[in-house]
Length: 359
Image (cartoon, rainbow, N blue to C red; front, side, top):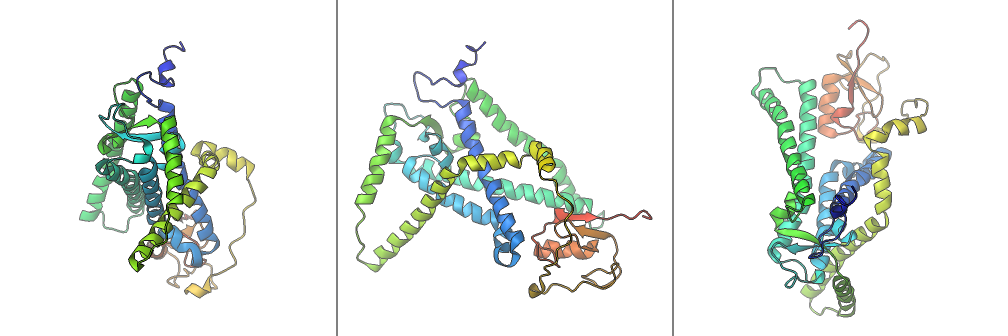
C-alpha cells in the first residue's frame, strides 16, 4: 500500500519537483501570517484606540504594503516568494529545460517577475476585501434599514445569492489543480503559478552557493554615493531593503510561533480554549474616553447615550457592553468603527440586538 503513495513525497529522477506536502506547507505559511498579525494589531487597538486605532482601520492596506516589500525582496534576490524560499523552493519559467535553467540568484525574467509579484500580493488583498464586503452585506440584509423593495437591496441580495457559487468554483479550481499535480498531470499545484508562467522546483546546491556569493558581493561592493540623486536612491534602497530584511528575519524566526497561533485560534480548538481560559464575567469598562468627544452616560438606564431618548430596538456592543438604539449605534459604528463610549475598535458584527420577554 505504501508503494502506491510513495510518489507523493519522493523526488522525481528527471527534475527537482517538490512534493505536494512541500507546496501546501509553503501556502499555509503565508496564510498563517495574516491572522497572527491581525490579532496583534487588534490587541493594540483595543488597549489604546487613540494611538493604534488607525492600524486596525487600515490593516489590510498596511499588510499589503509590507507584503509587497517582502515578496519583491525575495523575488528579486531568490527567484521565489518568502514562503517558497523558506521551504527551499524557487520559481523558474514554464518551458525552461534543466539545461537552460538559471540559478536562483539570477532572478526571474521581468515578465514572470511582475506577474508573480502582482498575483502574490493583489489577489489575497482583493479576496480579503471581497469577503469583508460580503460579510457586511449579510449583516445589512439581516438588520436592514433599507426598504424591502429598494433596488439596492435587490442588487446585494442577488450578489449574496451568487457569491457562494462563485467562491465554490474558485476553490474547486484550486482543488482540481492540486489533484492534477498529485497525479503528475500538471506542472504546478496552483492556478496562480500557471497565470504567472512559472513553476516550482527545489533549490540545488549550486543555487544555495550562488545566493551566498551574491549576498557577499553585494555587501562588499557598497560604495559611497557622490551626487545627491545617488545618495537619495541609495538611502531609499537601503530603507526598503532593511524593511524587507527585517520582515523576512522576524518571520523566519517566528514562523513556528505563527503556526502555533494559527492552531490556537482555529475554529476546531475554540472549545478547548474556552475550557482552559474560562473566567468570570468582567465588569463594564470604567475608562471612558472623553478626550475623543464621547457622549456622557445618561442617568436613566433606558435612555440611549447617542440620541438621549428612550431606546428603541435595544442593541448592545459586545466590545464594551453598552446599550444603544439600533439605528443610532448602527450608523455610528459604520462611520467610525469604534464604540462611542469607550473608543474600543468595533465593527458591525459586534452589534447584538436585545429582546425583552414582552417583545
